[in-house]
Length: 299
Image (tube, rainbow, N blue to C red; front, side):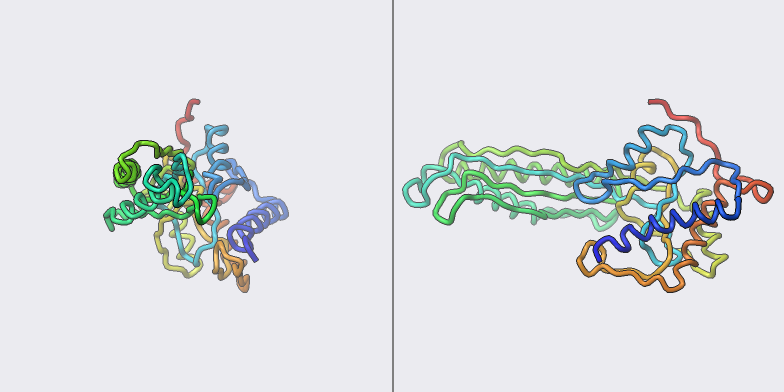
């Protein structure tokens, strides 16, 4: 079932925390803000978590829940830029107008071929893909329009921006080439930024990572530090400590119709993650907060 583990499981664990804390009358030293947000995936562009950190300037740290193996601690936020690229030309009959007008689809094809040849560093890992293409009106028409969507990602912002620069240049060069092919200049292109996920990193020696590591050890798990693009990107980019941990259970098939979850012994993951959070905020009469208060940000 789509979404059953990513991230319905996270929401259910979050609600279980509330029930456990209320039923057992646990009083924390620091405040806990429970959030279920929207717009993380695809063109949502992290709008939910961006709104949280825009409207709440006194958040000292964030622990997010995502499907992950026991012991995983995500502390690297992979940044990404996404573009919608639109090619426009006059169009015309495939036979009658041949040689007189450029093809928007041919121009896009040239761009895709140039993009495919771009080299990126393997470390920090930097990737790109043309994920969506479309356009044209009929098989016997020189296409008046074409469009594609490009995804660019990196574990560091500098190579992401360098790759972005190369891709945008390749697109412009492709339009020049297609116009030059027919000795005209009627093909044009426009680009629109449709996704901007800031990258960031929570250092492995920070309190928030150590709290998760110690909780993992208490539950018999070896910690594995990982990275990906998640809601944690936003606080990381603001210099706010943030991690993503699992909520228990075995999962797979993310973003597919066959997505699944097995919650056998999943309660252990829910306990593990809650212990991490309680260690950070402290429990009255039991422990002091590990997470330090941060200077309040200003708008």
